[in-house]
Image (cartoon, rainbow, N blue to C red; front, side, top):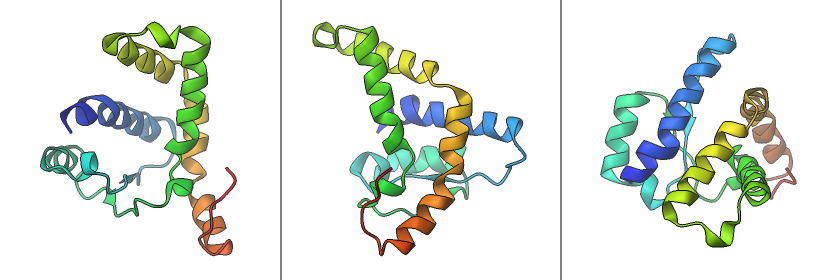
Length: 133
């Protein structure tokens, strides 16, 4: 849980501040599924401190609705293009993930985040079945 908070959540916190500064969108919420790292006491405390009243409930079985699911393969391709992934140790893997995150265009992240509403509407139209995003 600690690594989740000081890694991805720190990046998310920074990104959300940037979204607020770059757009007229100031009513930003955070969502995560119910996996054990997300429901750990350490994570819950972190969320209360950094995202008070900004955490939405989320089903662990709805990855189609989560914009991050579209970002993981893009980051993975970037890492595969820039690193010999078979030879990376744990620290180098972390550095590769950080580098991949930094390489993502901020406009793309904003567009991906703003697509969430359309994902919800499409999911409703599709009766909850998987989407082809």
